[in-house]
Length: 222
Image 1: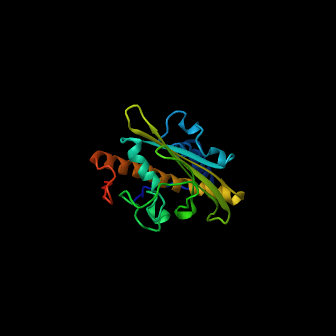
Image 2: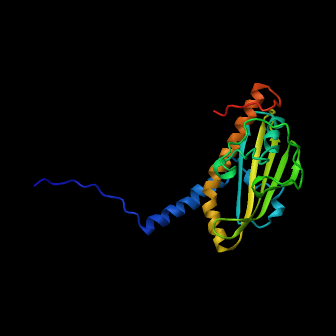
């Protein structure tokens, strides 16, 4: 008789599940909530924080952009307007329509009170520096609702390039709302990182081509 060598097989148990959950909450999740930030940036007070004073979901993320704030602002100013897109996961955020890779010249500047795609609204504007948007009583997939505000802040660095900080503060109602937050966070991390990288690619390409603000000039994001 031949002896069959059998290697030990991993068996998923509740103990392993609890360990994986603990590792996620203690080590992975904190990094997702402050991706790209530097020391102290995620604790800074930003415009819009006061609108949801006691959030049960919050993250702050950041990215450096090798272009001046003047080259970045137009991409923020046209987000979510008439299917221009959010530079995120278009299949979820823009009805499958690809986000614009050109700057539109037919849109007026964002103004407080302006309605945006997806039930968002402009809550605050500092042209060239800050865009604050919000959406209240948003139905979520677990049957409750969520209030959200997002702040986009541009800061000029010493070399003339841009530091972009983005913060989301939200409050989801009820026990189901807390569960929704936990499910929402990983997917939103993927989407928000894509947004930051998309804004960076668009602004840097435009700035490096030195085309100013061309009309419907297509930009390669590769």
